[in-house]
Length: 145
Ligand SMILES: [Zn+2]
Image (cartoon, rainbow, N blue to C red; front, side, top):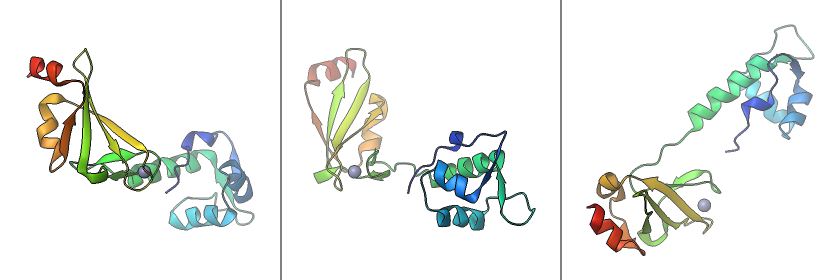
């Protein structure tokens, strides 16, 4: 689902449906759907006028609702905009000199690289059934353990 930036809406102005459609590069039916979903207009009849403040709050709430947290073993793919299980259940661990760990894998849908930061103390809980492949970091990891 597309992610519309609430901050594009200026809180000090009001918008016509067409103006919102233009601002967010969507069809005006999309804006009409937002009105059905709960976006409030000024209630002054037609043409409908929507306060920027209302629009911004509506989009912020919507964004919050659509946020999908990753379950254990999942990594968020920015390209597919959803949490996915890495391809072939394989993840690669990389630990930096400073002890910060990140894991990476491949998205099964778009095949882009996906990654997230993890804490080393938590990684066994996090990874579930995933096969963890250490890259160059075996030494550093054993030092930290
Ligand atoms: Zn993807």
